[in-house]
Image 1: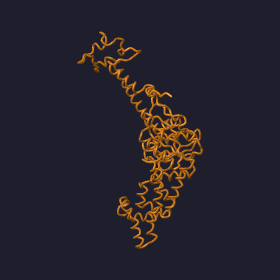
Image 2 (image 1 turned 180 degrees about the horizontal axis):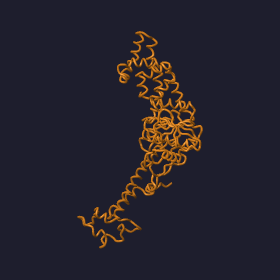
Image 3 (image 1 turned 90 degrees about the vertical axis):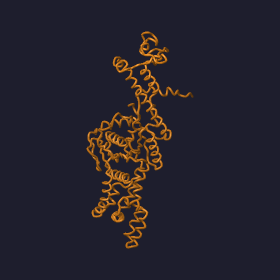
Length: 450
């Protein structure tokens, strides 16, 4: 079997994905069995826009959808024409609801979600004591893993209400898949583990013996938590633990239930990435971790993929043509004859441009191109503009080749992962029309030149 000519390979546009590896979005969104779609990936790869576009596409095809974003950016609200998003789902207006669908959107308020849990599982007096406790305020506002845990709490609440056909989740911009998958269990273990039993011991033992036991138990953690709350640490933590005593078991139970929900057949994970080395390395790690945790992976969404409508013109040929245009001494090979560009004469003839050019030290003609010459020769101006465009095209073809190599490395490692490509757009998505366009490109599965 003959090997393909590398030169010919450069002269072709980016090859499309084979049909077996194209992610088919529409059947996934239309399937009544699909109840949760989770968009995950590293930061800055377009998870928020992807989640919003998927939600809009599903809603306009007849499903009642809510999009839950954890990203603190306000792009989702702006693109959906909503002044602001909060912890309550808001109906999105302006969508095509002829198929009977609805679109709602919300942005996770981490602290408010924690407050709602306290208010729902404690009597008013105890809830007031917890909400006013300094340790609780720090825990609910920024303790490690709280955002991911509360995202899962909110997902569990939305699913339990059974009000929506489909929930689309935009996960936090974690640096690692471990953050998203492990943080809920870590926080649940913290609130329902050995540490809590140590902190509860003084209230149950009482007296000096109890306080001595507390001090022993706290000795290993005072250095860390002391930075969080300062001198009032022990008192605030003990008060918090006493007030939360009856609620701790529920945190672990709900964390386990939501984790099982993520593993259920009605859930589909979409890993979102850009065609860049670091982003796809992170995506590969997500894919491997989801497989290890038996999470249902639907495929990879590859955003911001570049293409060209002139893919048959390779970077090398474009650069050579640009050099020809920029230097009139360079001759073109046309029909096997060397001739001066734009002239039927040869160098050395009395009427040729080269004969009028000043000679260099070795006697060869030297091109001189002054602004006055350019202004006097409109054709020369066109040549320079054309050369600039050719160089831009060469840069684009080099970028396309680099993205292709990066994507091919990923698919070689994970041939089982279906991929949908979305072309890079010239500007930001800021309205429903832009989200609809993204949805169309997602459904196509292949990037079109941009």
